[in-house]
Amino acid sequence: MISYETSQNMISLLPVGAIRSERVFLTAALGRVLAEDIVAQEDYPTHPTSAMDGYAMIHTDFAEHKALAILGDNPAGADEVAQVESGICIKTFTGSLMPLGSDTLIPIENVTVNDGLIMIDKPVPAGFAVRPVGESYKAGEILIARGTTIGFAEIGVMAGINQVMVSVAQRPRVSIIATGSEILDIGQTQHHAGQIRSSNNYTLEALVNQLGGEAIGMGIVGDDKQGIMERFDEALRSSDIVVSTGGVSVGDYDFVKHIVPKLGAEVIFKGVNIKPGQHVMVAQRGSKFIVSLPGFAYSSTVTFILYVAPLMARMMGCANPYEPIEATLKVPFAKRSNKSEFTACNLHFEDGRYWVDFEGKKAGSSAILTNLLGNAALMICGEEDGDLEAGTLVRVIKL
Image (tube, rainbow, N blue to C red):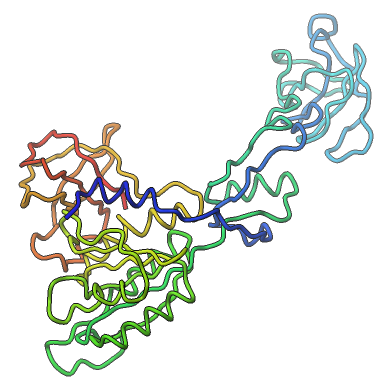
C-alpha cells in the first residue's frame, strides 16, 4: 500500500483537462464557481456622492458664515448637478450626486432651518458624509476572482455592475453506484436480517451536489460481474467521475477491483495505508475517472472526501473545501494503528482557536455514519504518530 501523502500527490497530478465553462444568467449563478475574473469597467461611484441626508456646502464656510442660504433641493437621481458657491448650500439626499463646488455634507440634525437659511449648530470635518470617486472600486480592479463560489454578496456586486450573464465552470457529472447483493434501497421491504439499508449512494449524491457537482444516481447493483460491468460502462458514458461503493476489498464477492481494469481503465493506485478505507482504488479511462470506495458508510464518506472532492474541485478550478486546518486536542488520544487515521471528532472554536474532543463519538467499525452528525470533523493522525497528549496541535478536516 502507498502512503496517504503519496496518494494525495498522485491525485493532484492527475490530468483533468481545461476547465469547461458555460454562461448563465446572473439569477442562476448562485452556488456556481466563477470561470472568469469579474473586473470593474469604471470607478464607482463615478462622481462624489452624498452618504446621508443633509446640506452640501463648502467646508471653509464654517469659519466665514454663521448662516447659509438654501439654494434648493438635490434629490437622488436628478439629471442635473447644481452649483454651490460660498455662503450657499443645497439640500442633498442620500445617494445624490454632490453639487459642483461642494466638498462637505452637514447632516440635517446638525443644523437649524429658519426662513430659507441654515444655522450651523454642530460643525463637521471637511469631506464629511461624501463618498469619493472610486470609494467602492476603481476601473480595472478585480472585484471577484476566478474560482470563487458565488454567494449572495457576489450576486449583489455583479448586479451593481450590470453583469447580466456570468461565465461559470460546468458542474462535474458524478455517477454514484452502490454494489452488493445485501443492499436494499430505501422504501424496499427487508426480508431477513442479512439485508442492509443503502445509505452510501444518498450520502455521496448529497456530497456531490453540496460541492457544486451534478450527481447521477445509478442505483444498486448486486454481486454479479456482468451486471456491475454494464452499470459501470453506462456510468462512464454519461459522467466525468464514476464513484462506486463496495467490492474493492479481498472477499470472494468483491468484483469491482477486477472489473475496473477490464473496462479499459488504468489503475492509478489500489490500496492506501489509511484507516478507514485502505482498499480505495482510483483509475482513469481517457478523460474519465473511476473512484471505487469501501462499502461501510463511514469509510465511503471519508474516502470520498479525501479522493473525489479534490478531483471535483480541480475540474471546477476552485479550492478544495476540505483542506486541513490546525486545531488543539482538548483530551488525550490513543492511536489504534500504524496507518494514517481519520477519526471523527467534535470541532469547536473558542478563545481564538479550534479545539477537538471526542465526546459522544463511538469507537468501533467503519460503519458508524452517525459519528459525522453534529459539529463533526475528521482528525488526521499520520503513520508515524503515536498516542497524543491533550494540548497537541493536530490537523483537522472541517466538515
